[in-house]
Length: 83
Image (cartoon, rainbow, N blue to C red; front, side, top):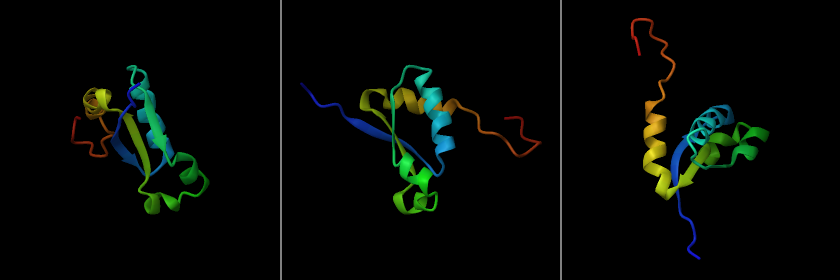
């Protein structure tokens, strides 16, 4: 049995961000693994020290997951920018 390999996809400072993106990927059938979420939720000041909440996906899903997250439009704070 071959061990599965995982790739770091993104880092987030807050778990709320990570959970939103996790839901987006899981809605596309991509399994997501978050590291240090509980530690940072218990004390948010640990986020910088630990490098944030790390989101991992299986290596074979990395490219597809990256494309999906890149397609997500971030909220624009510039009223002149239509994107």
